[in-house]
Image (cartoon, rainbow, N blue to C red; front, side, top):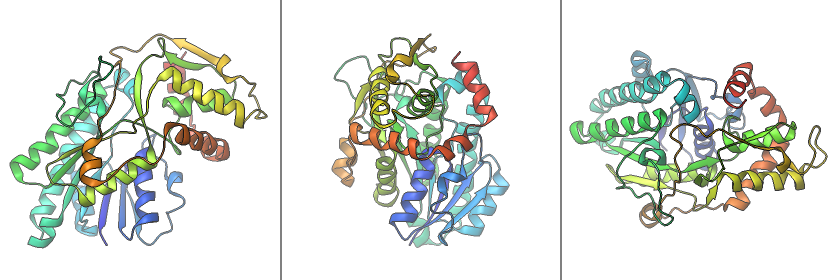
Length: 355
């Protein structure tokens, strides 16, 4: 049984990781989260009562607090998911991304290194620091057959992806310089239950149910590889427990879709599954509204996930068709979660960006 410190465990991907570990392993989880606008403890209601689950409200930039957490819980591994992650927010306010994603990662690395250096030899050899990154650090692809591999050069396009690229470099430098046993994973676009409604898929679902416009940047021809969040959580656990120190693993869903194709798929499912919902009048596609494209918008992301399949045996269980159906069904069945998460701050941000 391991003790795993998960930073950002109340976020979308982080909460999926916490739920996976508690529900499918015997490991213990320490969930460390600052609880910003996107952190939601309601996403962990199903596991919150487990004796193997602990929550600590803390900013990863708080070095003294991190030292206390390491000393108290003595984790065997760190899974670092705490990050500011929305591109649009990084364009309008990059400072928080620099602080959390770069300074926060540095602070966490130093706290982990201090703790790791004090471990006995066997525990020191077993310790892992797993940094969860994004395929956006690679920039974008213009060829129709090109794929991101683990050796693709970095070319970030947004303040968000640049801050994540910076944090990736820090993690690898701490492994090379100090010997800290690190691993890095880069994933494609995640979707699924408990997703904060600023992101494309939940935004479309919730807007359609309320009869509001469905905003699509430009022509909607940007291509993304879509990964169901529970598949991602399984992959991350495989990496932290079985991955090779110093290695990078790309995690993708093998589901390339244009943004317009994704929105149309959601609309078709809503027409099928929610024709009687209040304020909703099929077809949902009539609500599609094209808005001005965002600055520096990447054209195409696509991941080559052959390495993680070959070395760790991981492949996604969900196709886009099965995953998006589960996602729409979840949002229709969990309106209380949706209503609770849609705070005044979120509404103000939504109005500012998608008028």
